[in-house]
Image (cartoon, rainbow, N blue to C red; front, side, top):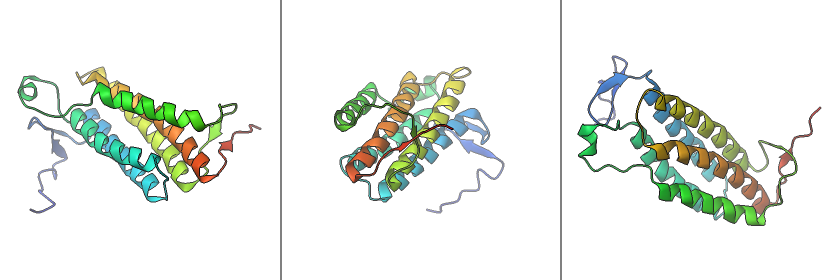
Length: 183
């Protein structure tokens, strides 16, 4: 199988329902940003990310493929008849449990935290900002298209998770969070 198909040479891409749309459409921008987020998380994992964060992130990377597929699959009669994975409430709860586990070992926040610290933590801060962009694009998409409501919830909770995970990585590696000191 060849990696290139040439079907996108006209600036369009295919959604999972077979419809061709512009690569500049908001839906494509939203799931493309989820793909970018997954890449940044992959970078964090590759930089000596400690357990249990590394295992949690590997699971999240798989779930982000589901989130992307969910965004690439319009909710319509054609798709409802087919079995596809959708972003689930269980995955949102899983993120909340991970945040709670990490927070048990972290000092309560007393200051704003700047991105940085351990390399993996810095990439997790980067991932958080990409996640927020994916969330904003997805929220904007909901104003014109019906999507699975769990996608926005998942992205919102994931950005919280990524912040907690960055702090937890710094804690586990003995690196201080970078505190914002203002002027």
